[in-house]
Length: 154
Image (tube, rainbow, N blue to C red; front, side, top):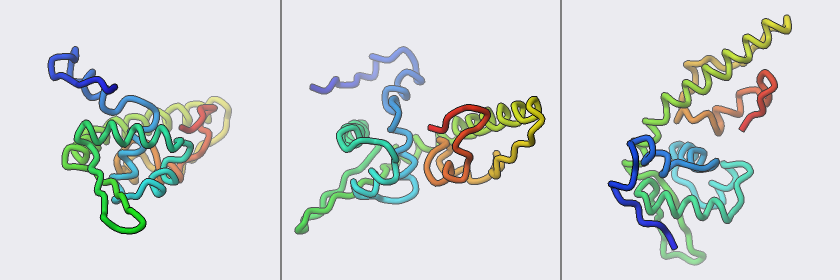
């Protein structure tokens, strides 16, 4: 049984926002849908590592929250596509500064570690380049190193 979200049930706006995007995969789903409308299988491939069960559950929650739109086409075989609602697009815009902060924080740490170790660190991606959604995931991340200053990616 799903818990019904009530406007007065949150301590603050951050609490309400985290209730919508909380979890490891939701921001990555939002990023993938920011790029384009996707079918379930496309989303599963775009969000590497997510299980079908978790992806299905998160999509349902995001749909219930008005962030994702699920379009079912009356075809054989059935076709279902997911896209962002205007509310979902505004949420991605709100996440963009957080993604920029994350990139700056990781790159600054990598540069400091490289200087201390006497090794230059070239991330290959400028802090202001390729903002996308700014959640630090997806194709934008593919250009980033997998390990930065000993921090695992993901």
